[in-house]
Amino acid sequence: MIVTGTFFEGVAKGTFDSFFDGEELDSISRFAWNYPFAVHAHGLEFRLDSNSRHADYLVCLKDSEQTLDTMRRHLKTQRQYAFAKPGVWRFLKHWSEIANHIRNAVPLLWLEYDRPDGEFGGTPGLFLALNSELSTHEKASTLNQSIDILYPSTFASKKQKEVARVLSVLPEGAAVRHLGSMPSRQAAFMRLVIEGLNQTQLLELLLNIGWSGNFAHLSDLLDRIYAEAGIVPTLIDLDFLNGVQSVLGLEFLLIDENTPDDGGLALLSLLQANAWCSVEKCETLRRWLKWTTRESPDMEPGAYWTKLYHIKLVIKQSNNTTLPHVEGKAYWVVAGGPKPETITDLHTAAQRHWRD
Image (cartoon, rainbow, N blue to C red):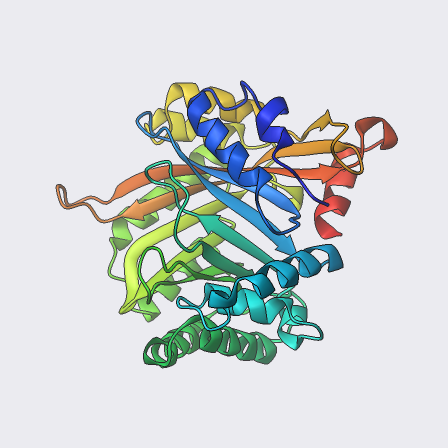
């Protein structure tokens, strides 16, 4: 269950040389060692251009008793969290409380620490993973309740209207998968992560909600990705401040049933060919396409599991050209799991691991 800083201190040495130096690794290791909550997984977010030498840090929290107990004990000692601004800490306190109905609707959380200068500080971003078995009405209710906790009243009503607008135009089979708040960027920032859209449905959705980006460029980009990599985005990131923003995220999950037939090789080749990822970083990412297990005496039940979790392309409007700028990001994850010799099918075990 608990993945400690021992991975970053020992096992990880040399793993991230394409992305950052030993000083950065030491900083991440110290933070992991001292993290107060029992976590399901640790993650790193990498920018894929050759100039970036830092990583953002992520932790995954599940509604296990071990996690909830450590959260309650820590938050109880931090009195400033009780009525904290921003609302991320309020939500964590609320989520960890005993017999909390919202935890049934949001059984998993991701916390993301932005580190553009390589320093840890400020409030993390919070991403709520909605229970996929909720009805449309239950999801809408959960989103509204969460927004009331995450945002001050001056923002909450507008955020709820933005959510309602998106829900009203979602096609059958599509759904909101995550709600994100990132107060370190802006207090009113909100992200909705949408799943289940094909290309036509995505373009129609963006048109219906008033997206101000370049539709022709996006359509051409999606066509090229499918032609060269044979895949479509698994998830779509929609950002909101005063309405929907022109920035758009295209996420390509590389785990479980979302894994392409080639594991993601064609996608990485596409990134490299378009200079969305440096050659050196792409070489490392190719080695991360399969699950890797590494035994550790400090881990229960006995091994670290690591993998490239997903790739994201971020489309931003550029001030210097009429065409948008495309930025590549990669998300790597490490979690605890069984020792390799105790399982016969690594893929099946991985599916069980993330489900359970």
